[in-house]
Length: 297
Image (cartoon, rainbow, N blue to C red; front, side, top):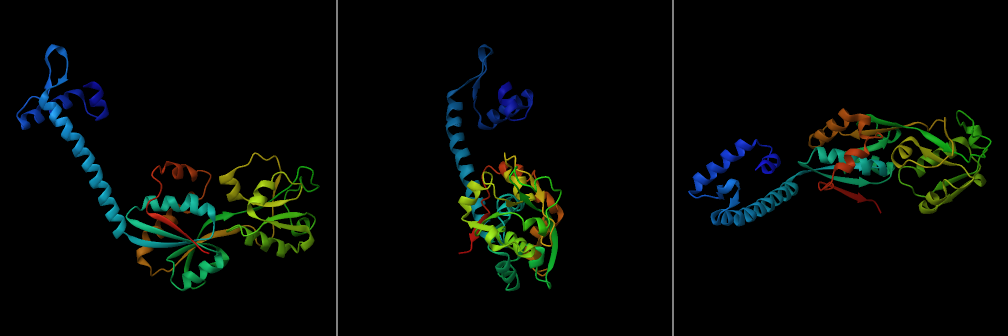
């Protein structure tokens, strides 16, 4: 009785009283309380058998109702240009608003800006410079660019890396890394890094080599926040025109259906993208059933 009361968050006297009420309602004795013990009677066994079925049916009914709610939920279409947003920020939004379905369209910043203008998405996470000027936008996170160097590099003790220093290094760059490759290429163009100093490679090869090569590579405050690294390579802030970049949300103020998501993102701001953002993500044991990802071809 004590263990059952603890599981039900009741006092033991309250549980005993509820059992007596149930027996009175059914007109039978469910438990034999003689000999200072509690054992189930034949009537109790009948009730237990049906109770299992009832609980199973109740769980199934609840699941069916949730499925139906999800079918009828309003869809909010969100554009996202960047993997960390897909993994950490957007599941938080979707789990906070379970009465909506979220369709996340993953594409380049240029394509998402056009989708916003063409009303194919309701809101989009974009670098600020890609936010259409005639739409509402607000900042969510400032992301800084860093240069990861070999411990043997002559620049390893620099406080900042300027265009002049960038032109002195040999760089490896990932091809088609969503949300990053375009930014890295902009930095190279702005700093006028010689083409002969840049080696582009597939993402997998880049990730395998980035901490073992003597060549430099870019990293960012957001990537280091989520991925971490056991690397001893020094990372120096890059100070040029394209760094830092402001990740913003752009939206059409007239899209009232998306207002709850916009208001939630605006309220949380950079809490959605922080070194603690992975914690709520890991707590979503059942995943995010009301969120689907649609990747561009």
